[in-house]
Image 1 (cartoon, rainbow, N blue to C red):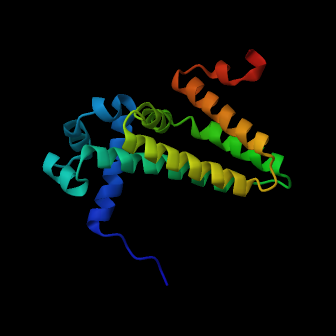
Image 2 (cartoon, rainbow, N blue to C red):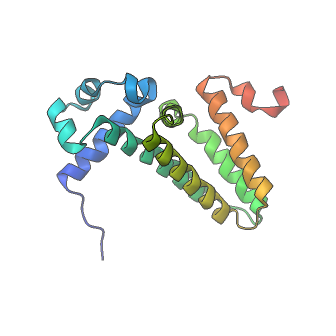
Length: 173
């Protein structure tokens, strides 16, 4: 059965999420105005709230996009005969993904918003989903290898968000 075509509202939600992700990347949940998002999306402020009931709902939808893109990146990159080769190929793909500065900063904004219990729950759920997915894709990897994969990824996030690439390069320490 072919996939069901998206409704106009679903399409607009997806488009708005893309625009909002770019706005939230710079200002986070509390520092980004919904007026700016609506203006950038070319829609009315009222329509933004018809599509997403609250600013927080829109921010959470953007977080879902970040986690899904990361998951898909890992899935597409997981090649190799051994768990270590698959981890390496996923890590290299993630480094390439970090070139999308706005996506990276939007990810970081979610972690920064974890004082809010709803944000913390979404961050935990998304991170656990990624952890389980990488473990599945690198079937046979030792727990310490998975731990190091994510530890290095978070270091790369911090380095890239500061535009400080040598921080993520162990040869430069």
